[in-house]
Image (cartoon, rainbow, N blue to C red; front, side, top):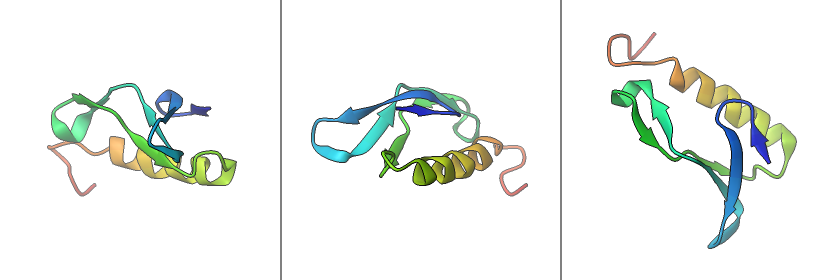
Amino acid sequence: MKSRIVGQIKAVDYDPDFFESDPHPIPYFDYKELKIGFIEAKHEPDLLEADNVLENFLNLDTKNPLS
């Protein structure tokens, strides 16, 4: 499964509906690399919506947190 924002996401062992990315730099957290979790990513509309929300969040940084 693939996110258009963070690339390949993988299912976790403990929950069949939860997927996570490899660590990805987060501008709002001073580019600290964190895994990003996705729920219900098997359903394309849900994954697309999650990517839209994630894209908005990744556009934030500590200089403009509410832009």
